[in-house]
Length: 157
Image (cartoon, rainbow, N blue to C red; front, side, top):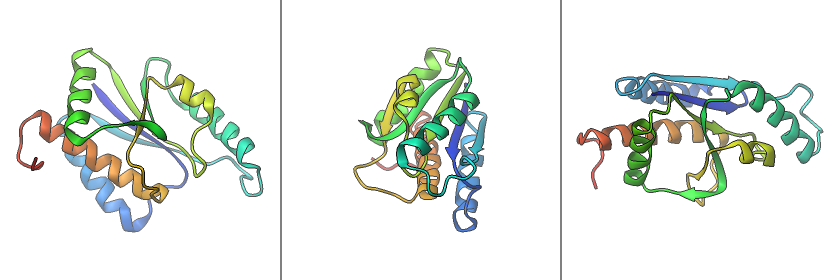
């Protein structure tokens, strides 16, 4: 199974880039992993929220493959503990999912068309995080899940 991490926006911020790269490299010991940054729509400034989300949705739906098992990160999604996430990922691997794609939307979240396409909608937290910090948190949690699956000592339950 390959893990693909999609995100709308700019390349990783310098301050967070090292952490994201570090956790991505750690994940690669368990699963092939790749980040795909989808540039925000041109002329996004001044667009109404709904129109921006529609434009982002078009870019996202063009980028995601039909066969991807899509996990959309959204505040209204289901919450999982780290051990539940590990079990959930292991179940996808057992189901022979070829590509497990996690998606971080734009500043206003994801359009309904993307949420409808998603196989699973996941909320990281009830808290609101800066967009780029979500990338780091996501990478760390996937790495943590990998270590839980392998019963390694990174996670202390």
